[in-house]
Amino acid sequence: MPSYRDYIEVLRDAFQGQTTAPQRFVAQTGPHTTLLTMPAWDEAFTGIKTVTVKGDNGALGLPLVQGSYLLIDNTTGAPVAVMDGTELTRRRTAAASALAADYLARKNASTLLLVGAGALASHFAKAHAAVRPIKRVMIYNRTPAKAVDVAREIGGHAVTDLAKACGEADIISGITSARGVVILGRDIRAGTHIDLVGAYKPEMRESDAEVVGMARVYVDSREGALHEAGDLHCAAQEGRFNWADIQGDLFELCRGKVGGRKTDTEITLFKSSGTALEDLAAAKMVYLRQA
Image (tube, rainbow, N blue to C red; front, top):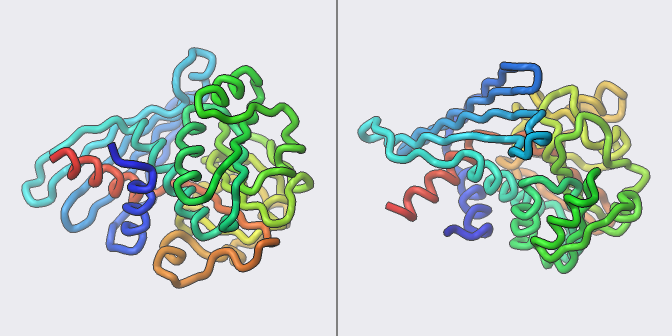
């Protein structure tokens, strides 16, 4: 089984390499259902992921995100693997955020706050610990019992006072399905790295405009952010963010074209929208290690 460091490094290589990943297709196929299809290809392989995001699955005790991944060998055009797209998405999403944190979080960042206690929580705890000396993990959730369950699973601490936890964290990962503000700028201390993963539609957000306005902002891809980064769209509409102020994306960070964190006191923010490049890189690694 590949480690989280393995996922992080294969993504770093992919962002430095040559992969074609068109903007994903998104359709609202029901009142609570979003369909996403994400193709990508390089010289050796083509992959396509299909994902459904079911906003009402929580009430059924089912995952919010479910998907499948098809990997094709370009030499023959034949499918060579069908993978669990849900698990692949969780691992590559956590790895992409940890990759960003490797450039943007303070080197001595040791306290991680997970805002959200869903299926991504344990992955994010492990991925961030692969790039920073994480000694303390706090978990906040609107349903406290879920935070307690995750804390027990990963050896963390469930918290109920989000403002206090934000003030103690070195890295804050927003991994919620929230449509409105959860993380407030007034609670963020100097030197924090903020990692926003939810808000996958322009009208959704996890943070208020103050969070975005106070930070140096990075994204995984500029095109993806322009289409889907809800926190940035909302902050721009409220006059607290200008798209020209994006400091860089993962392509530029990994290729050394832009710098990451400059000081220990600045606030950095990574808005993850997801890109099919990440899926292809992760799927290739998993397949080749099993071949």
